[in-house]
View 1 (spheres, rainbow, N blue to C red):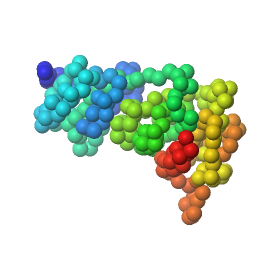
View 2 (spheres, one colour):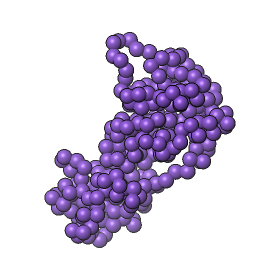
View 3 (spheres, helix red, strand yellow):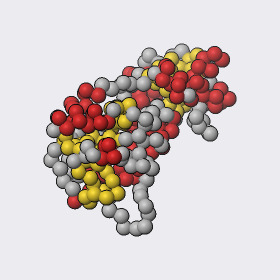
View 4 (cartoon, rainbow, N blue to C red):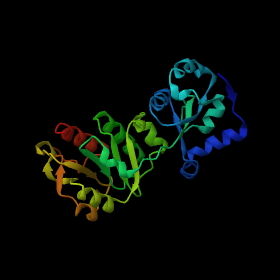
Length: 260
């Protein structure tokens, strides 16, 4: 297998993937670490290039086992060069350029799951990555993100997802009022998550549902709340004002998953 030395101009292009603007222009993003690279190779996402420092050449035989690796270009980077493309303080020396996959929102009605998590203006990339990982763990196959949400190719999202980004359909920049009304016409019930509402542990459902989560600091907007058929909550037993969004999402996923 041909391993190429990376050129200076190529290195500069790859390092630009740190920027959201360049990721959008090229419809691609960088992933790092052996775990996330393996998860990408297992998926049907398109890997364009792989970047390895010399001490990580040991991985090549393992990577060859994946059919998706056959057409990948492999580039050798020195540790100094890898630091220029990496988002990590201590880079692993393992990375890849991945083509961003686009999902057609019209396909969402074909999903197997009766429950679809929907997030309004989620802003923290660590939260989103953790939520994607939790959704994957609990067997959900899609997540909907409203306009003005953090992008799924943000490096912190990818890192926190631990590769689960490649297991779900992720719908971005969705106009939520239009989407919710369309789903209502398709007999979906709209559940809003709040600090006040019906105890989620006592909630059961038979219909297809959208599970709406609001922004980390402001919660669900009034416009979206007015579209909800029912509000559900996680009861508090202590004095904390609220739960972290990723933590609350995991609890909702667990409780509602038991009823699917």
